[in-house]
Image (cartoon, rainbow, N blue to C red; front, top):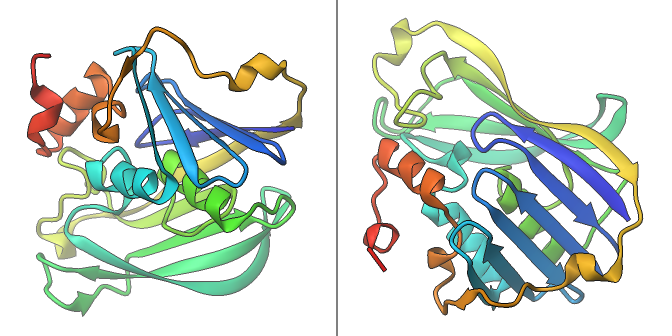
Length: 236
């Protein structure tokens, strides 16, 4: 199977393990592991920090990951419209390229800022089914484009990644900087025991996947970002 190490400015490291019949994503900052097996219509998430576990429909899991703000890359006062922009070799890897048109929905309503842009590369050397690509993209904080992520660049205000995430104020006067938001650090072939994809025992089963996705550190990040869904702060 293939092992990928993904670095994210917003989310920290992720390790992705991709085989023909299984995928696994480890998210150390949240203490979260995501496992899915062919046909990849169900996802099992378990949190080693809270010792909670949940199985959910894959489409629901992807939606909740993004909605929660675990993936902060596309929230805030901007709207991104992605379109394919050909092929390129990036970091020595052949990739499909996507670019985003950026619209500032509050700071400059309905006005596209041509100075700001996003660019995203998806690997072409490792192809996965769409259902797998959707899970991978969501789990690493990549745009809502299925595939194995290679790199995400953002050019815009130097304050875009301050707390709250992607806050926009006086954007015309802010210095513009290039940020590499996501980068794929490595790919290697590995062998793992069958137990690598086992679901742990003794965890508390939750029907609501949102109660499994974040540990305390993730909760604090959401508080800082002024995202405060009540279920995250219950005492039980």
